[in-house]
Length: 222
Ligand SMILES: [Zn+2]
Image (cartoon, rainbow, N blue to C red; front, side, top):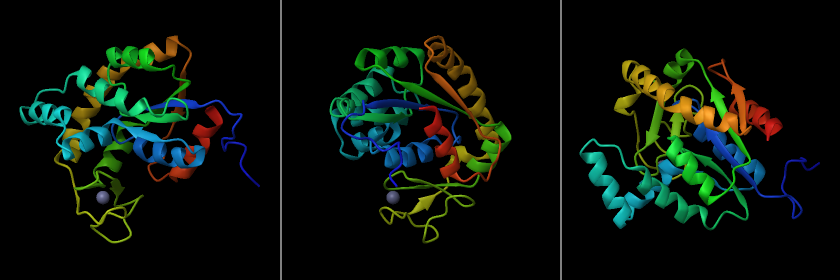
């Protein structure tokens, strides 16, 4: 029997933002949710990698910022997102990795109205545990986990066959620092969406939870 969640012609496009700390699994949930809802998963991380890979003017600008260790300005990321969203506004989307600042949240409002912001709440200990087991594909950026999301062939990406590596910023001390930075930066964004009644909280305390169960929970909220 078809799930009532599958979109039909009469269904309005759903515009969802998935929000949560690094290591909360937002990329994983976003891509599974995308399959269930039949709408695209848009990750600003992926978009940025694509611009760099294609050596576009925006990609080159980003490379310059990252190699000098400075934050990529909001405007550049927003520009890239705008380009991508233009083709998806009628279908709906699941957005991940954006907004990272209230300024970006306001920019997003100018582009389109978001229906729901899913806020993933995961304890730091669970995140440290998960991130230290994380592997990423050098070529396409897909994330794996040695415990919960193993690649079919060890060390190789399921999607593109690329080599998997452990990121330097996935060391426990670095993770704790990143979480501290995230909490400070995210508070105003959480408040922004909360005041607009768009925020839906998901709690996840179990480090070995089946991602599909979390997606079930999210489906009930949207
Ligand atoms: Zn890959």
